[in-house]
Image (cartoon, rainbow, N blue to C red; front, side, top):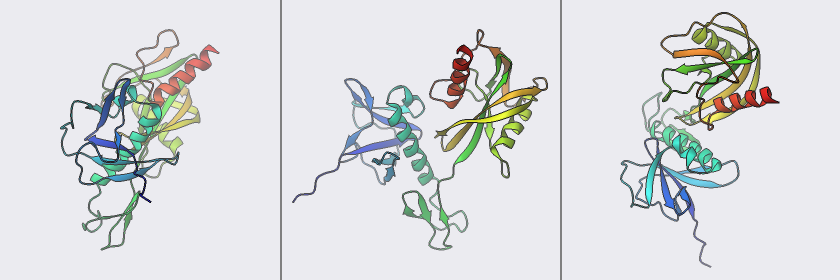
Length: 259
């Protein structure tokens, strides 16, 4: 009996641009037995729902034909389903890891794919996995107001929340306190876990918290933040897009405030 052919989803990236196919109802992830354009190497990507896809890095931004277009991974949130966006994020993280882990950092020999998420050095016997950079993000309450800041690396005029990367030897809560103190000069209390979110730009994990203002006056870390203040429900500035955990933290506070 002839074996049934498999139709695959193809998550193909040129740098951080995701290849999407145009349809009558919008944009979608390409599917097919073969990739829509030649690729040298692909990765099999498993997802928590039991499905799989193939992912690859492209060497140029040349399109197969006018039925396709490239969209930035972050911007793709506006064009594809939330489920497809999450899968694209995982695929991109693995593709990025694959491109940046060709050689063993201990001895310099070539690494070999050992499993779907690991590589192996046959020379020094070391095994390597994708590295995830963990960062915290925190919504700080002061009475009926919350602290919103504009970071210098924000692409736009929106205001978000204090965030920063976890350092070696820190707990998440210690990181929250340190980042708030370094970036704003404030002391906080009642730190509570909110939720977490994969952040594939290129390989992060955002861990969200809430906290209450304890003491201090705002003194911004000038090389990190260009603005920061406490805002009430009736004078909120432009907020982050809804794809981010920052917006979910803020929306949760708004909902609690209006309840």
